[in-house]
Length: 130
Image (cartoon, rainbow, N blue to C red; front, side, top):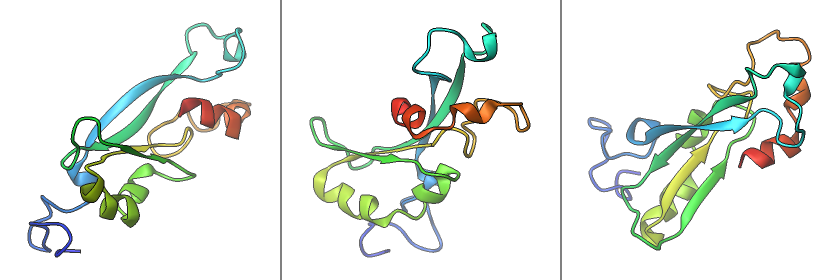
């Protein structure tokens, strides 16, 4: 990996691929994308914050965006172990975006143990987040 990523070495990770070198962002998402009524009738809790990471070192304007749709774990795991996106980013001058799946990592619509909260953990709701 050191040869592919100029300046990356085991003694200095500042130029290596991984979450430590990405910027962390949050976007406010609807808990329920498909109904007008608030979840559980609670008008004060209709959104949650979804986390995503951006790496823009290689990015040039009008170049592609490589978007990783997070799956069932903390997205940092995938930021740190998804080689193909990192390996291709420089060649394509791409922006890398890694979005976290709802209910995983730090993107939690409800506290653990909230009754019936898993009703909003569906592939349709997750795709609407992205």
